[in-house]
Structure formats: structure tokens, C-alpha cells
Length: 347
Image (cartoon, rainbow, N blue to C red; front, side):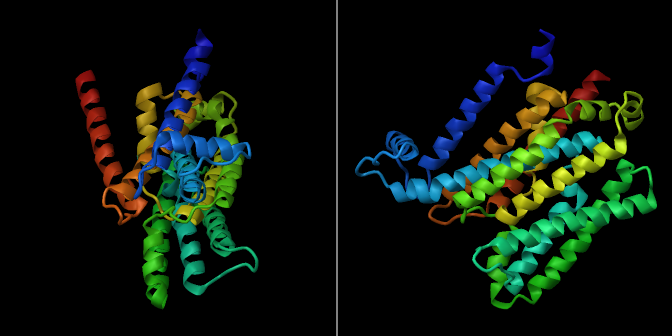
């Protein structure tokens, strides 16, 4: 019974997976052109096993446009939400998410430089943007950690957050400077900075899957340490946690995963901030349950946001970052108000 309380059960995994698959199917079917559920399922199923797609079913729309986009959106949402849950647990701050470190701003700066100046790798389209985003994300993390260690050798939470916020402002200023010199590329860069997954491919989905498995696996393997951090760093040390090593390991995993997500989808706000709170309301604060729930919640939240971006003003497509900011801000105010009211009643 205790294991069922402290860990995700098989039934919970099954229910969350069914909910996710249902939302994914809905997102494949709906868009500027609505498609029947049966025909969509038949196209996907037959393609998996090399069977011919039924006549009258728009195979190109389903398999070449919508399915890779839905896969990428789901994994980006899961990754950003997981990073947010880890950062909130690691820094013991409910307003923390992956971008708190300044890694997201650093990755965006690298991608904007690549887009503005045409940085590319021969034979590998878009690899220049992805490589620059990942390099700047990792470089930003190293710079922030070096400054934090210079100013505070204990790697305190407040020092890391403060330096991360300052670095984010600095990176945003540099990004604006680069955009002002980008000439006729301003429109495409501006749209990218608002977040978009319209050009998703199966190659991107594979990259995201590998990053999520590697970095997400590292985060999920540190649930016990994150539970110890929830009571305080001193308590974590007393129960045998190597605080500096765990912090560094998780921060690197978060930075790499955010760098990959930003390089593919641009800057998408509020996912890592809001969805861990929603998951916490469903399964509680235990990270052994919270992290898996955050993965599912982030995927569903971003899928529904992307669906709204594609359908609300169709055939015009909104930026997914605009939708997540509007919805996420409202949801966060509601969650924060409910939390404060609950504390007031408790007192």
C-alpha cells in the first residue's frame, strides 16, 4: 500500500497515457481542415505496419504535417514541464522554472544569432540554429554557475536565482540588439522568438525524444534527493545527499533539455511554471509522483495550446507562445489565489 502512495501506479500511468493519446489524436484531427477520427487512425495504423492508406484519406496532411508537429509539441511540453518541476523542487521556489536560470534566454540568444547571420552546417538544415542554441544554453549555465560560485561558494538558491534573472535581462538586451541589425529577417526571427512548432519534422521529434530520455532519465533518478531538498538543504546534507553534486547534475540536465526545446520551438513561456502546479494539485508534492505527472500535464497543456493557436483564428495561425502566455498567466493567477486562500483558511 505504501508503494502505491509514494509511486505512480500502473493504473495511473494507464489513465494518464490514455488521456494524452486522446488529446494527441484530437490535435491531429482538428486544424484548418478537420479530418475524421476513423480515417486518421487508419492512416497512422496502416503506415506503422507498411499497409496502404485507405482512399480519400489525406495522407500527406496527417503523416507529413500534423503528426510530426503533434509529437514535437507533446515532447516539448513534457520537457519544459519536467524542467519546471525539477527547478521548483531544487530551488524551493514556486515561481521557479527552467528559464529562471537564464538558460532559456541564453539559448534564445544563440538561436537568434544563427538566424540573423545565417549560421549553418553544410548538409544539415537547421543544425546551425540548434547547435548555437545548445552551445549558448550550456555556455550560459557555465557562466551563471561560475559567477554564483565566485560570489557564494555554497551555491545557495538565492544567489543562483538572482544571477539567472540578471543574466536573462542581459541576454534579452543582446537579443534586441541582434534583431535590430537583422534586416529583412526581423519578421521571421520575431515570430520564432514568440514560439512556434509549425515546421516540425520527424527528425526534430527524434532529437527531442533522445534528449527527453537522457536528461529526463537523470531528473527522474533524483526524486529522492529532490524530496530531501523540499525540507531544506541542511536536511538534505544530514540524510546523505551531496548537495553540490546533485545541484550541478540537475542544472546541467535542465540546461541541455531547455536548449534543445528552445532551438526547435523558440521561447515558449509559462509551461514550466504553471503545469507543475497543476500536477501538484492532482498527485501531491512527492517528486516520485510529481515528476511523472508533470510530464503528462505539460504535454497535454502544450498540445491544447497549440490546437488553440491553429484553430481559434483559422486559417490564420497564432504563435503558440502567445497562447501559453495568455492561458498560463490566467491559470497561474487562479492557482496562486487558491493557494493563498487555502493558507488563509488554515490559519
